[in-house]
Amino acid sequence: MTGRLWPRGLRARLVVAFVLVTVLGAAAAAWSSAGSASTALVTSTQQRLTEGIAGQIGAITPQLRYPPDQGALDRLRAAVGADTLVTYRNLRSADGADTALVTDALRTAVRTRNRLVTERITADGRPWLLVGTPVAITAPNGARTPSGIEVYAVRDLSGVERQIDGLARSAAGTAALMLPPAVLLALLAAGSVLRPVRELRDTARRLAAGDLDARSPPQGADELAELTATINEMAESVQASMAAMRRMQNDARRFAADVSHELRTPLSTLTAVVEVLATTADGMEADARESAQMAITETHRLVRLVEDLMEVSRFDAGTARLRVEEVDVARAVRDCLRARGRLDRVGVVAPDGILLRVDRRRLDVIVANLAENALRHGEPPVSVYVSASREQVRIEVTDNGPGLPEQVLPHVFDRFYKADAARTRTPGSGLGLAIALENARLHGGDLTAGNTDGGGARFVLRLPRRREER
Image 1: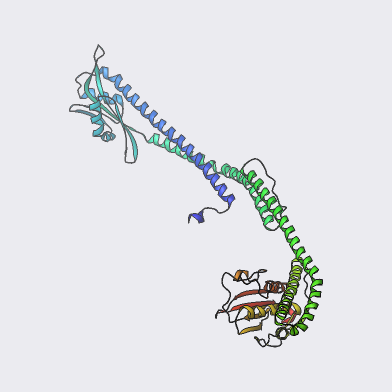
Image 2: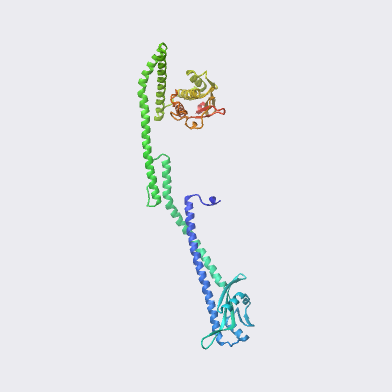
């Protein structure tokens, strides 16, 4: 609930926090001032009342006779004013019903302390001030002795309470008046803080979008300026690193392309020699024939590796192009397997009449790589399933082997990746699946790897259909 009530935006949070601090500070100052003024008002009123009562008593007491009679008590009560109680032993003179508010605690305090005592109470929802004092007899020599007369006065403090309420309302009004300027100041402060933050956000978005030249000029000398300078330094470092990486990638691509191109001529010559060697190998002795067969196999493997490297370099350079023609997918799959002598080892389930505009040579490369991979690393039966929908054509290649381990799945299309690091002399180049994926993407499709429910590997090629093919 707290997360929902508290605003999410940084601007809103800054404004709310600034307004709260300002208004609460103004309210605290106003209430503190009101409290101090209220205390001073009550204290001054109490002092004025007690001094007035003491002065009235002091003015009449020299005229009294001791011990006093009822008439003397009445004159003393009349001199002090309304709501006054005067007692002397069993004599009592009262004026006003409010004298009933005089408490036993006040009387006991007056008698035991033998001096003026005050007490504030609340009765019937109204505040009252109780004043009690003994009357002393002053001898000619200045000595003062208790006379036994006690005077108790009750004074209403409702007027003082109304003044205190007025001070409280004034304090609340002062706090309310601070709200509009506080909001305005908060908006201005938030704007000055958020402006560089927004610039940093925009710069970060441009960097994330690939614009490594994006920078934010530092403004001022505060923490935001330091953060801006740090982000600019980070962007410069990333830009330098990316530039160095691009140079390394370009050098690597150029190296692979140049090496592959330079190897074509000697490999062509070597291939011709190997073909001649192959025709004469049967007449050689066993050891020589075995060496010749090994040379022939490795030469063919080297030729395929160079061809794959040249194909990869074309993908990296962005020079690979499609030669699109209308192809019967089922016939293309069977022709691919037949040309490589795999049709008897791979089952094909493909309805005729599925036409697709693709580069036939690249489709042949994809199917051949997937079939060879299933035959080499899986177990029979290996099957190819072709199906079509309005949106795409799907070619699925499955085997009955152990499947792809979980740690291998994320890397099956990586270049030169081999699941078993010990198999460094396998016939494959480690580029077949990577080339198949690049060819699928060149058609606007995709190639994914996974496992069947029975445990074998499954590769699924998806190629989009154009409108005229549907």
